[in-house]
Length: 383
Image (tube, rainbow, N blue to C red; front, side):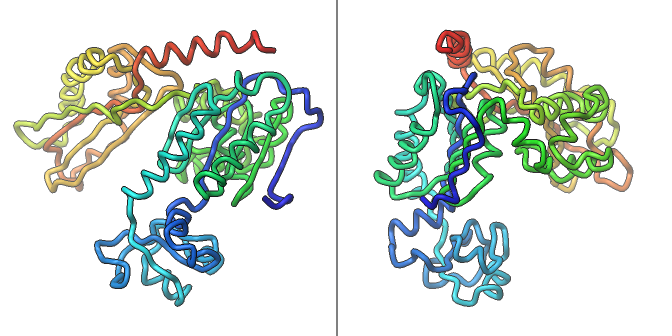
C-alpha cells in the first residue's frame, strides 16, 4: 500500500476513547473479481456490463462497474456502453456474473467475521465492523492493517477502510482515499475531520436533500453541525435530527447483523381507481395491522416504513422513511402513514391509484438486536 494512501488523523496513539467502528469497502469489486479470473486484465481499462450478451458479443448494455484504469478515461457506473466506448475505444468488456462475485464476497465476509465483535454486511462489497472489544485499549491501526493484509493475501483483493467511533463517519472515512486507502480518525478529532466536507459525503443525504440544505445556506458538515436543530427537524422531520447528529459525530446507530429477510410487504387493490388522498390513506391504515402482526410473529424489529402506490397505467411510486433506532410497535407504522402519503401527487394530470401497499425493511431479529445492545453496555468496562 502506498504511503500516501494511509491517513491517520490523530495526535496520541493511546487516546482512543469510545467505540471502534470500521467500514470496509472492496475497491472496484466486480472488475477486481474479473482480474482474479483473468490476470491479463490488470492495469488495463475494463468494465463489467449489465447485458444479456456473452463476453465476445457485448454490443449493448450499461456499465455496472469499471476498473480504475477505465475511470481515468471518464468511464463510470450507470453509463451507457455506447458512451463508455466513445470515451475509451479499447475498453475490455465482461458481462456481470453475480453468482461468482457473491462467492468471492462470502470469502471476504468470512475473514471479516474473524476480526469483528459484530459484523454487518451492508452490500456485496461493503461491511461495517464493531471491533471495540477486539481492539481493546490503544490504537486500532494494527488491527486494521491485519484485516487489509488478510483480504489481500487470502482473496487477492484491495480494500479501503475507514475507522472512527460512529457508523456514518466510518463510511465517510472509507471513501476518503481510494483505492487501497486507510483513514483512521480518532474520536476527539472527528468533528475536525468532518467540518470541511460537503454534506453529500454522508450516505443518506441525496441530491434533493442536498439542494434543500443549500437553500438554508448549508454546504458543509461543519455548517450543518452548527445549524439550529429545531429548524432542521421542522424542515426534514426525524431525518433533520439524524443529519445534525451525524454532522456532530454523535449518531449512535449500532452495527447490526443483517436479517435473513430483506423486507416484509403487503398490498391491496382498490375496488375503483381513485385520486382521493383520504381514501388512499384509509386503505393504508387498514394494512397496518396485517403487516405489523407478520413482523411480530417472525420476531422482527424494523427501521424503515415504505408506502407504494400503483397507478392506473401500472407505474409504481414509492416513498420511505427511516427511524434512527429499531421499532417494535404498531404505532411506529401508523404514525408515519399520513406523512408518507403527503409526498405523493394526487393531481388530476396524474393517473389515478389502483393499488396501495406497505413495506417494512431494515429488519433484524429481536434477539440479535438485544445481543448488540448488551455488547454496547459492556464496552465501557474496557476503558
